[in-house]
Length: 91
Image (tube, rainbow, N blue to C red; front, top):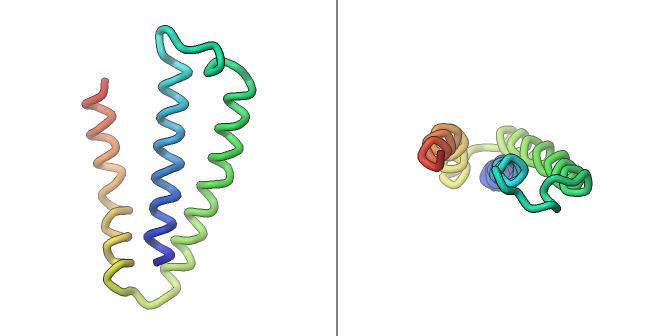
């Protein structure tokens, strides 16, 4: 279960970063997306989510694997390719 939760946190961090990057670099981005407060809040959340996700994956790898953890590992392997594909389709 830890692997699945860790993968979910890492994916949430990646999606949050992609959203913030898109908001900041839009041709006509809102004023709040250009400010220092926005960058600081997003950075703080990313600095919290990414290590927690990596730690949960590490804890999960130290335990015997069950079906849900194998699914979590499969999602961890496939998700970068899926995100890359989706980002290319958005552009």
